[in-house]
Image (cartoon, rainbow, N blue to C red; front, side, top):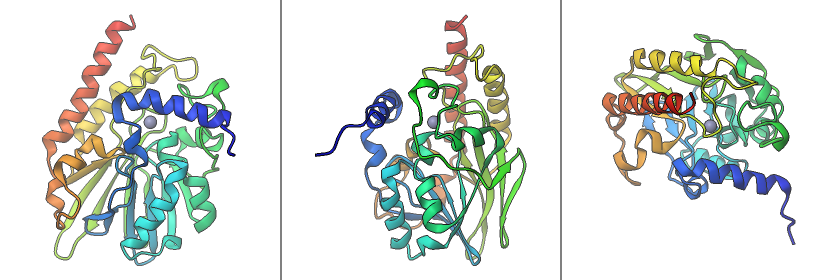
Amino acid sequence: MRKVSLHSILLFLLLSVASRSFGQATWSEPYEPFRIAGNLYYVGTYDLACYLITTPEGNILINTGLEGSVPMIRANVEALGFDFFNIKILLTTQAHFDHVAGMAEIKKMTGAQMMIHKNDAQVLADGGKSDFAMGGDKGTTFAPVKADRLLRDGDTVRLGEMKIVALHHPGHTKGSTSFLFDAKDKDCTWRVLIANIPTILLQTQLRGMPNYPEVGKDYKYTFEAMKKVQFDLWVASHASQFGLHENRKPGDVYNPTIFSIRSQYDDAIDTQKQAYLDRLKSQK
Ligand SMILES: [Zn+2]
């Protein structure tokens, strides 16, 4: 019989809180992997978005979902015809367990280099213990990983010809990051943004947290910075945030333009900005 560990109870509680906005069940459900645009592929779960960027020099994986998502991600990568063990670089949009809990295992399996914004590196290295909102006595929420490279705003991650620019969009976590790059198609190039939509955790006190005094200011910066980003296509850390299931049905043919709706992106940011303003008022 399997013992119910403190960790799994904790994870369940965290998931319950988070599921108010995203739906816990959909986090671990499978979804068919598919080509988003050019050399960019969706390899995540039904809601936890994971992205594979392929290059002749090896591949890049952005986000892992939960610890239990790893076999699903591997199966997705292989179903698309790629070698899971050819992942050379691991990136994440934010050091929360629903996006990095599989990093330790995948790093061990592939030997890939973990790169993360410097302000999320500590949280990644202590398995979430030092997270300003979800850490503390609750202990680790995922297997820790020590980063190989620390990123700053505007830094470029390179693999062969591929260049990915890291955009620091803090608030949700201190080191939350969006990624901007060109996905190369047969006869065109798509400028793609993998956006970390700045949602606000229930625990976040916008007037400052002991371990994150500037959280409110960071959100304000992020709303402005994100509205200025120019792109052809956009996706996000959660499928629900970019309307994957409204815009695409399993089995649909390849069509990058379903991810081109700028107004959906602006609405997603504006919704969070309004939530921020409402929260500020209520936390006076
Ligand atoms: Zn999160």
